[in-house]
Image (cartoon, rainbow, N blue to C red; front, side):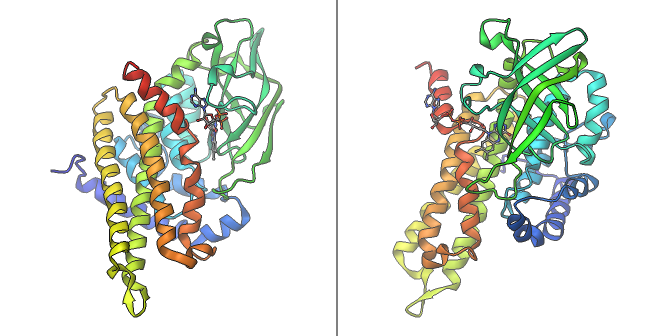
Length: 380
Ligand SMILES: Cc1cc2nc3c(=O)[nH]c(=O)nc-3n(C[C@H](O)[C@H](O)[C@H](O)COP(=O)(O)OP(=O)(O)OC[C@H]3O[C@@H](n4cnc5c(N)ncnc54)[C@H](O)[C@@H]3O)c2cc1C
């Protein structure tokens, strides 16, 4: 029996999602990658199709679906073979902060726009000198009357150019220890003192608008504090389970896509008048790739089911984040070897997948940090 029970409604949603991406995204990926930017309007078109923030409740104008709908959008997006459109980050990693910790007023104000695509979200934790060690951040948030003044620089922020609303992690410099000083703030695009910097020129994910963000005397109303003051670190930790799961879904779906492509290539391409797939050394490589992908899928589906049952699976999602993100890179490396010189050209679609997937083991917590968490939770 399958671990995940997809209903007829889920299957219809998958078909609709696949068709949307096949018509509205895949034909334009080459152009977007060359332009190094996805158009702002694709977010609204996804919103109109009901593909953003699928779990946001109906009272905030969301579809109110279960998490399997989010899984479907993420998996189908992988079929477009590019990661410029960071919709799972927006829908399933950042919007849940507002849905879970936001005041009723904040939810009413922002969630409908997140669903429609009128608001694109970003989450700003990383700083030029602070990555894994979030508690070491230096951005400050100081209360002055009815306002909060934010100062600091953030970098490597996904959706950093298109974002209309950023959740910014910053510290009250008067509070110790550092963990208790971090709070989360909602900063709208256009707020004086908030400036978007350069779009970073990355090794992959060309059309993803990863950028620097700067806050200089940026004043926001006190009401834009998200959740309770000093609880930022706890809120970030609480949302990591789903964040890591979303990354693993992306990794496994990508690996499956690569596996399908490389097997098809080996069946249809020949060396010395014999399909490559008839060579035993290639068969062994393909068998290893297919096994890794299936192992990842089995582990992932179990975790999705557990997550939907509300189980605490932080250790397992950390295991999955590092293993699946490294697995997709192993699968790609082997696949490019199999493709030979074809894999040395930009015309080969797997070249983009190879570049784009490389950072999966770095963002949202590196493999080493995942292993630190697993080791700690094993009582080591
Ligand atoms: C494409 C992309 C998109 C991103 N999007 C966002 C975003 O939207 N928002 C955001 O806030 N950030 C984002 N990031 C930043 C990302 O989360 C950080 O890159 C990540 O947390 C790692 O931080 P770092 O790169 O500074 O590495 P560092 O923390 O400097 O680590 C350097 C090396 O040391 C290792 N290391 C660090 N600490 C330990 C330890 N305790 N034990 C063992 N090894 C350790 C790391 O594993 C790594 O190999 C993005 C990054 C990329 C590449």
